[in-house]
Image 1 (tube, helix red, strand yellow):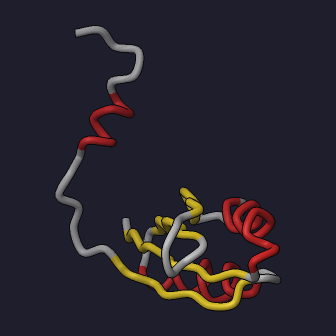
Image 2 (spheres, rainbow, N blue to C red):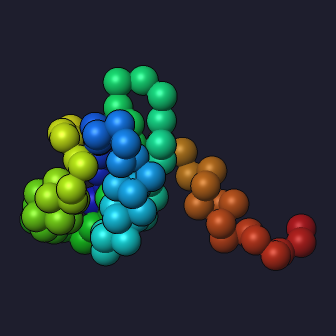
Length: 93
C-alpha cells in the first residue's frame, strides 16, 4: 500500500465543494480542512505508485476550484495507534 499526503490550495469560496468532490475519488481515504498555508489535506492510499498519477494528476487536480497541490509520499508508518483502535472496536478486554 502506498500512502501520500496531498496539500491542496483552493479558491476561497470553494473549499467545502472541493473537499466533497475530492472525498468521492476512489483512492482518497480522508480529506481535512486545515489552517495554515493550505486549505485542505487529502490522504491517498493506493496499491501502486503508478496509481497516484491517476488519483492526483488525472482526477484530484482537475476539480474546479483547486489552484495548486503538493504531494508527499510516505515511506514508513511509525505509529499503529489508529490501526489498533480500528480493529479493537466492539471488543472487550
